[in-house]
Image (tube, rainbow, N blue to C red; front, side, top):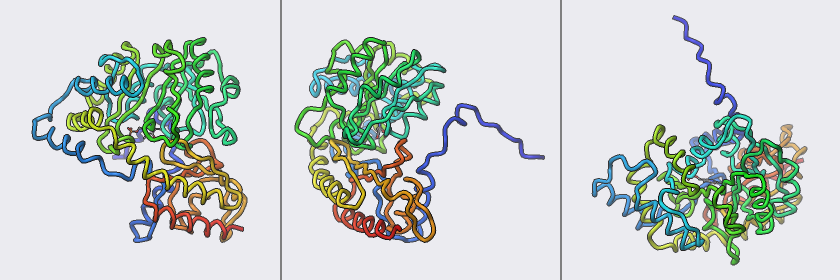
Length: 402
Ligand SMILES: *Cc1c(COP(=O)(O)O)cnc(C)c1O
């Protein structure tokens, strides 16, 4: 019998293959063959989950917390999350305004499914986190990308934003501190966005996953703090993946208007039912226990950030914004485009990342993955000696380009 030709659904055909796939696969293959690849492409903290959180996870198993939970997550965790929001920000949420999901990414997916229709446009500041456009596309809506400028330290420019508004604009996604730029949006920019959102009834999605990893002393400006009325049209996305080094536990959460959370619970009920019971109890320990862990990471990240920024800035042609949060630097390395090595031209960030992998055995993420081809993302969630050696290799490899 002939193999039947199975045609895939259109929605999945909309999703382009990730520009990082090829580089990732090559890095893995090199590593498997024994090459000493230094990895700066990782999007997670290089810390173990704190001991008290691990203990809570183990205890949950022995206590028999091994069955289905409530769809939006156990009530203790949702109450704990409400207390975190109240204590850390002064925001009032009730447990029926919280959904716990299988990672922050899944919360974003659930909200896109309940909010967007075909034709709806979602504004996405660019460089953007890789998952925003595909999640919007999978909901049938249209991502509308608008640029952030490194000359503004990747702050949001309201005038540029205004040029991308149409009658179909439905929502905007904010991510501050940002992956990949590490930038924090200024209060002034958020005030402008807030005013536009109030005037036009936009939904604001505020992805705060890095909000505990900031390097300044000033409090992080937040869209909910610019006008209390915005809470009725804002979804706040957070989770324990980054702040408690819990990426593998898969616990994120969304806070927002009751009826939107209720709709998200419908979707979650018919897809994952609930996040892992064991992981929810571990997250409960993270959210309700001591809050010093993100500060410990921050202290470790500070000298690494300084070293990375200074070393990259010292490389000919490279410009690099100092990130105000998260654990990435996003240098502009377009000065090397148009050069070549061994007859192979460097035409963009993907080729430059490939070159750095092959010549320096250094894995990075090309800016093309974030919609910003002039840049390369380096993570400083790596040990200082690895960072020193890696950047030494990058510098000497770049010197070989002609
Ligand atoms: C890591 C990350 C998330 C959430 O990741 P999960 O592992 O799904 O919790 C959300 N937004 C951004 C920008 C991230 O970098």
